[in-house]
Amino acid sequence: MLAEAANVLAAADSVSGSLGAVAYGLAAIGPGIGVGIIFGQGVQAIARQPELTNVIRQNMLLGFALTEALALIGFVVPFVHK
Image (cartoon, helix red, strand yellow):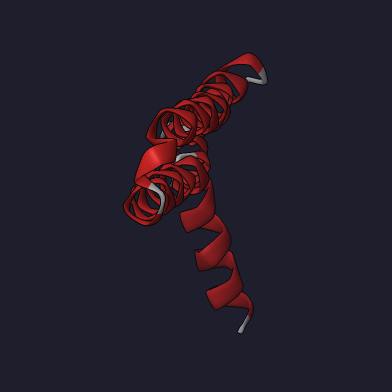
């Protein structure tokens, strides 16, 4: 049992790589889902209320910009906190 634990700890010490890349990959999941929801619901709203296309499009682009800002923050933060 003790030898197995030592092997697991040795393997954990030998793992190397960029944790920043892994953190960004995880941070990109949320904005990716958010952008899909924004545009999916936006297209649905335009289909239901075509006379409000300009207002819906403006709100979609604003939501998209804010969601993408989260992705950019997720990209920068792992490299700042190295």
